Image (spheres, rainbow, N blue to C red):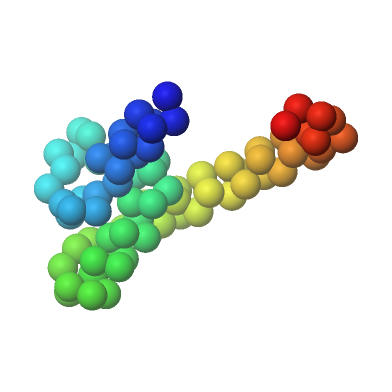
Length: 86
């Protein structure tokens, strides 16, 4: 299952294709991917092509911080029994 999700994430991240070719109605799906905005910034920095959208960058940071906080909360909750479960 993890392999499938990993491959799906690679196709959802605009590594090979620019975010500008994604249809407008599906752009929000790609914007919620936390890696999409940094990939566009790297593409613009190295190739001179791409789009830098501030709202996509803010959404990227928001989702990344949310996942980090959720991970910290879950780890704090299970850290006492963590070694027993592994």
